[in-house]
Amino acid sequence: MTIRIGYFPNNNSLFVLRHNGLLERRLPEVEWVDLRELPAPPRADPRTGLPTLHSDWLFEEGGYDFIGTGFTPPITGLGQGRDLVYIGISGPRVENGRLVSRAGSGIRTVADLHGKRVGIAHGSWQTTLALLALDREGLRWSDITPVDIDVNEGGAALLRGDIDAWVGAYPALAEVEATAQVHTLVDTDGLFSHPSLWFVRRDFAANHHTELQAIITALQESDAWIVANPRDAARFFVDDARRRGGTADLDRWEAALRGRPFGINPVTDEFLDEQQRCADLLHTNGLLPRTVAVRDAVLPWIGEVIEANRSATAV
Image (cartoon, rainbow, N blue to C red; front, side, top):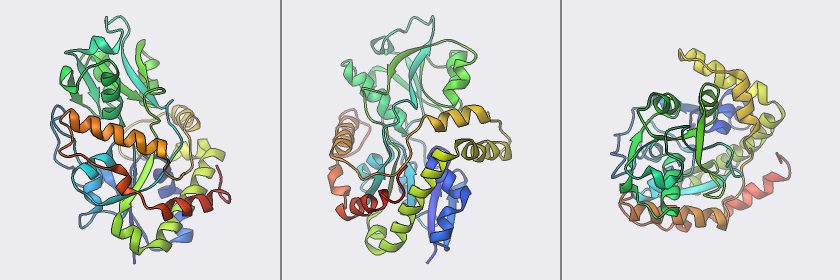
């Protein structure tokens, strides 16, 4: 059976694994599905809903069996009634990005965002960060004007004045910092742990133990390789951007990779508590159509497999 794995640059671990060939040594029948080549899901109004983004393609013909994303997509999938299960999480990525405004804009605190335009890659971890920041100040989602914007385009929109604040991530945030001064409204640290995470359909986890273990082991090996070879790993991202007609800076990508945690770890109670709190907030603010119980998406044996592999492939 051919195992289909979805990948894109935003999940650094799977993107590098796609290019370094380590999975094929363990699982020869692999098909890599570039998420950027799939038909885009319907855009959701960022004021009233969440796009499904990645979880739908787990359940569609021509999609994939295994995916890695950021914090929000599995909550969205569960909220849409998708029967998915968590595989594992990375360490905290609190240095990866933050909510910023232009220096001198007069927007100095999150409270100042009332009625303002906030740029986010809607449906990603950026939605969660903005919502948590607002909630901490006693604000609701309806108190801002969320603007759905690509993660690589938000910085330019901020500098043009098209948006008033932006949840920026490196390396795109570094490009803005190199040309203009920004003011930090809130750091990720202290709001949530912001890990990478991986998930699959429940039926895939139940019926493909051997294949799933091979993917987990290869991810651990590949992440260890990234830590030991960050510049070589960065070249995969730069080469990809250039093949697609764009530009990317090797030094900035290397710095971004050096600043991120790698390794796939079992889901923890602390992570699940964060997921549940965010799921509840998303529902309360009208972005999720139903309440979810995130612990229903946990299969304990998967954590045991990850833990057993960590001693051999520790990052």
